[in-house]
Amino acid sequence: MRREQSVEKGLVGVDTEVSGDSTHGVNPRRARDAPRHRPTPVADKTRRKVNHTTSGERRPQGTLPSIEKEHDMQRMTRTAALVTGAVLGVTTLVAPAASASNGSSGHHRSGHTILRDSLEGSMPGGPVLAGNVSPGGAPWVVDESLARVREDGRVRVRVEGLVIPGTGTGSVTTITASVVCNGMVVATTESAPLDTDGDARINDTVWLPDYCHMPAVLVNPNGNPARYIAATGL
Image 1 (cartoon, rainbow, N blue to C red):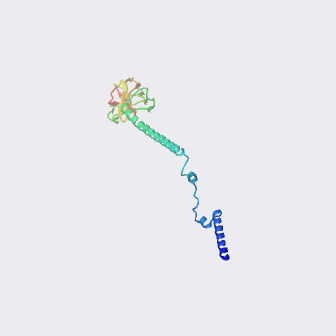
Image 2 (image 1 turned 30 degrees about the horizontal axis):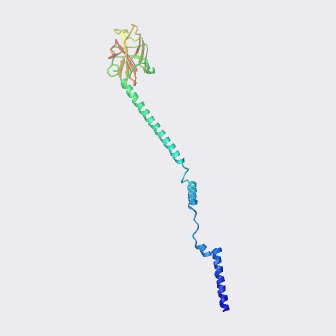
Image 3 (image 1 turned 90 degrees about the horizontal axis):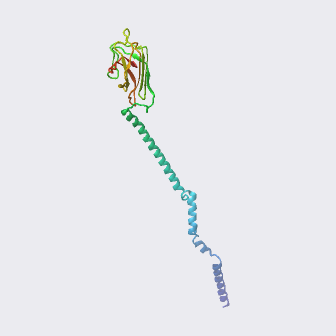
């Protein structure tokens, strides 16, 4: 009996000791089987926020819209510049064509010289110029001469010794100057007297197209635009 009571007391002691370990200590099996500690939702949000910020996936609020707005403004500026350049280019191409169709003369245009050349006398059988202007029926010579045409329509012609050799000026007492542009006569000056020595001066302003390709001057006898007795470029 005593031995059984001792065994029972020993078992009670073991239970008490195990119970004490369960209350004040850590049961290794329970510690192993217990779930791992998880961060609180607040800590988890903080960690995700830090990770996003450091990884470059999330930027501070206000930075990206500002950059996009700046890029949009730059694209708009470049587009406006291209459109303006295109409009100016079209205007530059259209304006000369419109002006050439209208033409004008006057001081609003520049005095740029488009022709400055000497004149040569015509010869029978010489070339027909400007489509339908034929040379005179007799040979003409000229000692000194100068023809000048400006963009604004001013025409200056000076001849000295414009005569038929051995005959003089014959029946020619006046001359005019026809201006050729783009292969045709576009204007003719007022007549000027031609003296017996073959000297004359023309100073006039005429209508000219804004575009004058290959300009030339023809000297007409007695105001006859279908004939020339001297010309530039012969």
